[in-house]
Amino acid sequence: MNLNKNYDNLEQSYLFSTIAKKVNEYTTKHPEKKVIRLGIGDVTRPLCKAVVDAMHKAVDEMGVQETFRGYGPEQGYDFLRTAVQGYYAKNGVTLDLDEIFISDGAKSDLGNILDLFDKDNVVLVPDPVYPVYVDTNIMNGRNVVFTEANSENCFLPAPPSEKADIIYICSPNNPTGAVYNKTQLKEWVDYAKKNNAIILFDSAYECFISDSELPRSIYEIEGAKDCAIEFCSLSKTAGFTGTRCGYTIVPKELGKLNKMWLRRQTTKFNGVPYIIQRGAEAVFTEEGQKEINENISYYKENAKLISDTLKECNIWHIGGKHSPYIWLKCPNGMTSWEFFDYLLENFQIVGTPGSGFGKNGEGYFRLTSFGSRENTIEAMERIKKAGF
Image 1: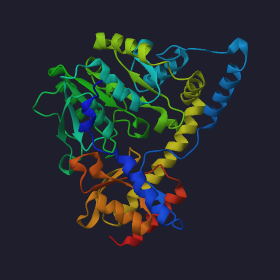
Image 2: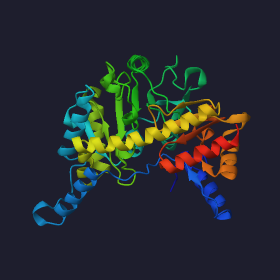
Image 3: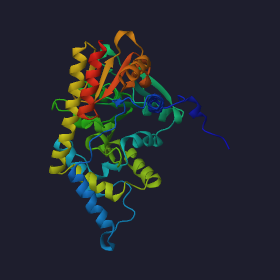
Image 4: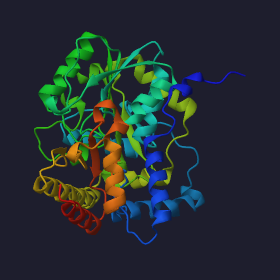
């Protein structure tokens, strides 16, 4: 038996596992201290009523012979795919049902999609970057190259002069909160078409965009269906972090890739549970949209509180306006992990060290707005007392 030696090339510990270990060690030593967690991107508000009601109804259906469901279609029930189709149509994007694939979340599909591509492809990712993009390719033994995202380009890098085959783009971005405009995305689409490359577009945070001039889908860009696969999740949109549901769009303009993804899913995936899909369907109803937008507004108000505090403290940052993430420059020349330890030990605030997202993240730090209002306010009061 031979093991996959590519795993030896991974970082010894996943970023958030290291954070959890540090926080657990601190809370064990100081059980009397209240730690406020503004690090991981996990939502804190419950599922909206429309979703819960739909799930309850689906549970009842599963308990009656006449409406019981067994195995469903691996690519998702038509009722949910139709709801996703209608959601895209509101943003001016036309999709066929067989281009929409329901999944258990964007994270899974971003890794699983690599089954379709030979390991000899060159993968281009921005630095800093969501670790899953890099780690899943390292596991497969691919050559990963980086494009520089930094304060000079507002953490929105333009296409490089070198050729790449697979390109990861996340907008609004995790971890930086930066958002590409249509002109900038068109440059990437043109680059991909010129180089016969594929863009893997992560739109997990599209629901936080409030400016109609900013694209919520890459398919708002002319030519994108010829070169892009889009991934989205209901985790941040509707609080499905614990119930798991998302969707991936593989346009038929991509030719063989659409049928390959269908074959992959029907072979390796049994589909999202019926009960969850009924809840997801409710997200796209008029009532569901109203309720989830109230939650999104809540998180965006938290982000504004964080941003306003950082401005008051003269701490450079971006994000927070069209994103739940705020990306700040560590004060007083501290490294990312020094700032992490400083906040935890002195003010009991947990964030995410920017260096965990790549070398260009060193000296930066990510805060998230996915906390309660009370905890966000308290955390900002603590930061003000730090006197940066």
